[in-house]
Length: 116
Image 1 (cartoon, rainbow, N blue to C red):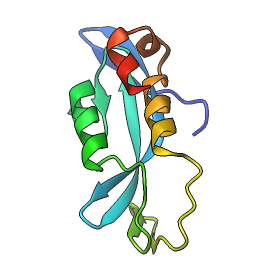
Image 2 (tube, one colour; image 1 turned 60 degrees about the vertical axis):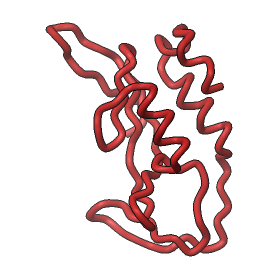
Image 3 (cartoon, rainbow, N blue to C red; image 1 turned 90 degrees about the vertical axis):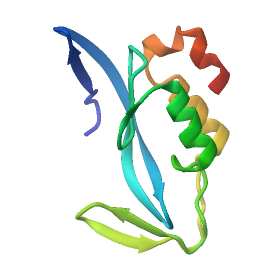
């Protein structure tokens, strides 16, 4: 839903976050999911991790920034299809930048600047 922002509670403190729609590549299938980035640096994309884990997922293609022609895509319990004539409006560098600046607190953290 537009306007909703994820949050989580850690030791009684509310941690704000932001999310972006992403495709997770699992084998030969791309699954529509959400990348949740929290102000304390925690990241969730099918599992909890941190910046190093996100970097590894981007570099390995697990968090997809490009799509293979003819590959299968899926929205869990809703639909599946094959990519045909892929025309992505979001480039890999743009996606990485958007991830880096998705949460206001994270924009201030120097450790995130290398993703831009």
